[in-house]
Length: 294
Length: 319
Image 1 (cartoon, rainbow over the protein chains, first blue to last red):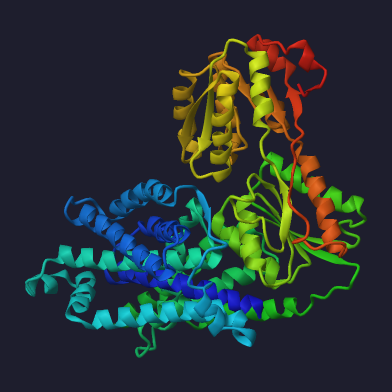
Image 2 (spheres, rainbow over the protein chains, first blue to last red; image 1 turned 135 degrees about the vertical axis):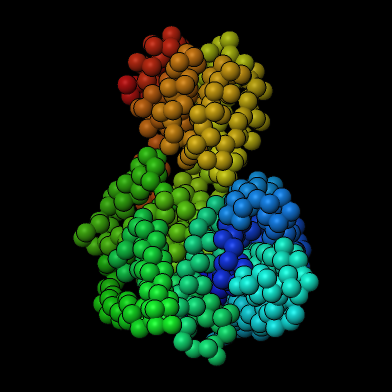
């Protein structure tokens, strides 16, 4: 039971990040590596503000803002300076290491005793007694679902429609008299804002910031997106954001089960890579088959 | 996608079967032992910990099951390890090094699983000094180290320190160095790196500015010690270590903690908690202060240094 709760908690937090990766990887077709930097950026901003006594909700908003700025940086480097997509992300990610260290002040900042969205008078009185073990999960659920609904809503607006078009068919965007560069930048801004939000939530859940916590975030994000999207390929009614959330939970479940039952943590990265490869190959097989039928 | 579903369900089913098999009696203990990464001092700590438990009659393989996991210096993995210990409902978690201790503390809070840490430099700064947690701290004996360097090198004025900007223990150790150095007439020249690959360039820059190098327990720097020693030897600049393993592989000398003993002391604390003699929240954390003087006589001779006679009495030659 503990394990199920912990899988859901982790899965939902990372789902927020994975929705950001969904925008860049799936919609924009942009391999955005800045994620490895913006995820700890969200955490760094959050712990810095929270340990200074800021309201955790404000700290979360600030984290989202910081993530948006980082996304803007990647976008500007790519669109205005004409640096290749992969490299723009790597540049931002590299710069963010120093930025994060400056924001947090130290490589490891604990907030065990501070007020967070999980540990405050309101939440503690709302979820007392039998509900107490589910407190963290319920709050994470609210944040994740709110992010999902906001993103769903945005993708239906005109701006969201252009965003979806730019990855598939840039000509449409240009013919609608819109600059595809600025649409890309908007996409990166939203994506990295989501990633930073996820970093902010995890920092409050694990209650400390570690400078190295971002390493490998993009892999988890991609794996979640690919699992989710492939799993629900046939179900046209399921929104991609919902698929990504399910994908993230399933991914975390696999990892948690693997590590709990026998697998040593040393092999974790290898297992992640193999799992990732298997999903990619299975996904591609399907696509190839579909093409041959067509 | 049937295949993915099949694989997933197989994993789930096998997991459920295994989870049904866990049961334990009163005199048998299961502990989760999480280590931040493979590292000479931390390994010594772990071995000492198990030896400490054994001295109190809790022996691995007899009445103790140890679930040992290593996070390979990865923060995300520490959380996974801590959560897996909690979901297995172990009797106690032993966490080696700061990030592992924080992850364990966070995962175990409210679950009635005590956490015993070791090799944490500053439990107060890490905020793991209150709650169902206790352990031992490995604050570096900086004062003794400075005294040692002054005695061996009466003319020296500048000590170089290489550290990783991402390791919080190193930062607090440098603060102590800077505070105490002036008392011995030294100036600290520090050089920060972010990954092991930066070391060759950083060490060359640092060596041109200092009279000697003093090491911290910085994981990344200690991991690349051979590169540092080679560069320093080429310029005949002595490198002082911070524990026995570093002197064994070529540092001139060190005032260091005995990590095996540190682990042993921690193991005895854990035994008290397991036997129910005291709870982790009742036992305050302990700091080891007594340091040992380790010397590598071969290296000392090569560089042309001699240990003053008043110190040679307590020196342990590891050459």
